[in-house]
Image (cartoon, rainbow, N blue to C red; front, side):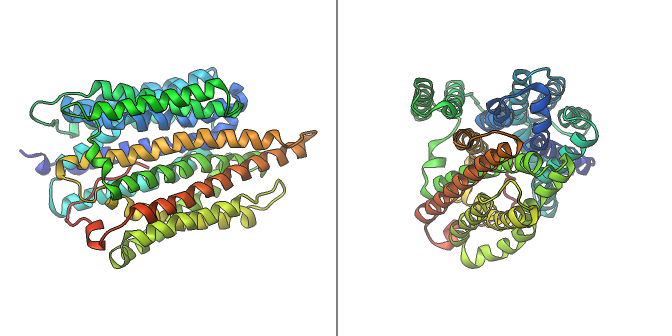
Length: 481
């Protein structure tokens, strides 16, 4: 019996969509919990940043390797191992007694998410192979992915306010049990045939290179000219150059360079990294502002973040209708500029400001702009890609967002620390002024990054409209945002 005609395939879809939900929501669920976790565990601002960075960095750096493992070792087997590992890492993080334990747990969550996400997507692809059922399955999967960040913010707020921040991690155990049992009974094993070899050296160099780069940026909090900062940044850059050299020499590279050297796709990956920089990096500081400065309880803070996601969901269908009419280039230029306008608005926050006046308009503008970016982005990432490179191209786009978020958060933390250090603090109110000064500096820096994204789009996203919109009735791979 073929996988597509398996009677339990719709139940399998539920299980795989649940997996996607867990992977995506874990990128945001701890954001609301971080102020409480920082206070209880005594985290420094640098450690606080790494609670988010560790997950995004491990996830992004290992996503391509995770896809290879799923294809070669077996997608169901990889999925089940990823589920168990993710559950154990979540339990360890929920029981962490200090900041280092929490950061390590988040890193392992990202590692096993890098196995789970591509395995789940590949299983969905081989379970629903064609026609209306395939389109329906991908629509469900994509909807869950799009809602994951919002679910994470609200669920994180509920658990932090009415239980404890630790439940933002422990709740994953329940999801994992359902996903593991469902995976055993509802999912059919499959793997790629032929001579499959792992690019181990490429995986090691790119992971260490990205890790060194992000760590070097995080050290910039103490000064951009320090030997440690320069040393780790140089080491990271050198390892990434070595990775590129290795990819030109191995028979089955982790990242075929033809995927990224195309001008349009390369530009799309850069813009994806820039979007991740803002969505993962800058929005974390908004969560801090809502709770620490405006004094919102966790649930209210989670709900206050929702307009960004809701506006994206409302504008996305409009952008989808515009896409075939005007092409992706106008959307990709206008989108980052609108996001930048929203970030500039947020950069003027004050310690005694009002959410409706100082925050909400910025979130609405950011949502409109991000919808214009996200809708054409996956098409551009797959533009002109040969079928056997489609998985690598989609994984690269998803990796770019996570890595962009990791680097962005490290840089923004350094900018925040520098801005706060310049404000004299004598009492509680002046402390809040220092915080908002730091947050405002982060938002303005993020606006500059988004303007750079518009420039990238103008330079790289060129060509006939028909060439930038790949034809085909199959569903595209679902991004993991």
